[in-house]
Length: 322
Ligand SMILES: N[C@@H](CCC(=O)N[C@@H](CS)C(=O)NCC(=O)O)C(=O)O
Image (cartoon, helix red, strand yellow):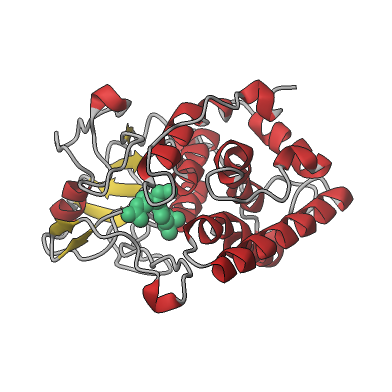
């Protein structure tokens, strides 16, 4: 996995030497917010007003973080307002994410670039850091609004409501404290926990991450035994943030990332939630198992040097379709 250094691509893998074999995720760099009237959001600059034909979303169908933004784009009826470009599922160290159409990318209709790192340098010519999806691009200011999925879904949740007429709220004021609390544990131990387990380079770091992951899944299973959703009786952001990890779990994290104490299919309540969310209109079409499996097994050659992509499982085998 490479990164940009002073605007130049460099093919370095994550350095876990300094952290005792532990994978540590770096912070996203672009942190502006689209708001209803263009005023500043919780971070970054003002000047990103919610408007039609202004923003463009770059995603990978394989990536759980980008997947959150695709789901919110559907749920909030933003498809006509915010077009999307999809990168190739293959992410080689030599180039990072690409727009190769013969590998399943849509290409880059906006700029005609070959690689996602060129979108980052289009925004900031001397950018240093990781080149990640999702990216929310602003055509008006010619820059990246945000490359932080947790914040992009909050923008999608409310900033465009007047344009779409959709006022569904997945982060309602009365549940915020509970949602934040659930998100914190789910992020650290589950969403990012699978990566900490898979990218660990010492036995101890792996065992610590995998153990915390399954403790957290047991905790989620308990919550879902008492209430239909993570924050009570309404579907919220907390459920969607967990969902994108759940739909990948048995297909890639169980094998490729060695998260193999149990499958999601072994947790009745978690499986029930996964199925229910999967069945919501528009959601199944955001789940692309081929991109998911190809990305992980093909791209991480330190874990899977021969790039062999397994033959399954299918949606039916995963139990998503009842
Ligand atoms: N904090 C970011 C993380 C995004 C992220 O790590 N995306 C991965 C794909 S799943 C990526 O693009 N990785 C490329 C890299 O780290 O070089 C977010 O949630 O938006």
